Length: 171
Image (cartoon, rainbow, N blue to C red; front, top):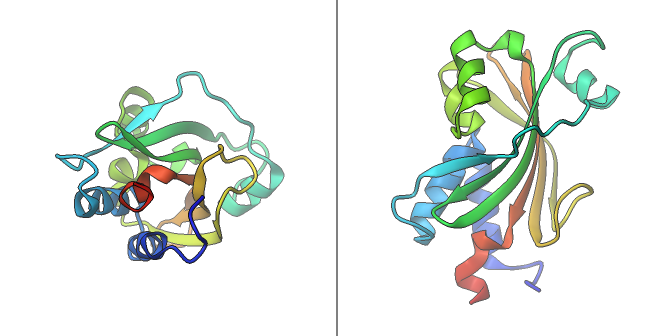
């Protein structure tokens, strides 16, 4: 078990806070920590994953009960190390058709696909350790909404960051 005051965890939190895109932060972290080379983030998508959006999620996204949402459950990895287990509900109508197609058919992370939209991240919750719904071994949990420049939400994500991010400290 890593201590709550772990200096590596503190640096990792700072790296995440410095980016609107968790994908970009993980890429930078992977390179800096030499977790893998090249430091490319890949989304291993859980095919057929489905999780209904709660009324709270729909409210955070600013959509009604009838508005279609898409869901993506991924494990973001750098090399062989899974750095994050993430659940993402997003509003397909607020993305381009090409973006929706890429999200449905590729292993490209959400943040990379939607980067051209210039989104900003609004962190709703941050917790050291495992939040509800995160797998065992989670060292940091985040819930965030990604917003367009006009304030409309495009995504709500729950991110469960793994012990692999702290591998150098744990070894």
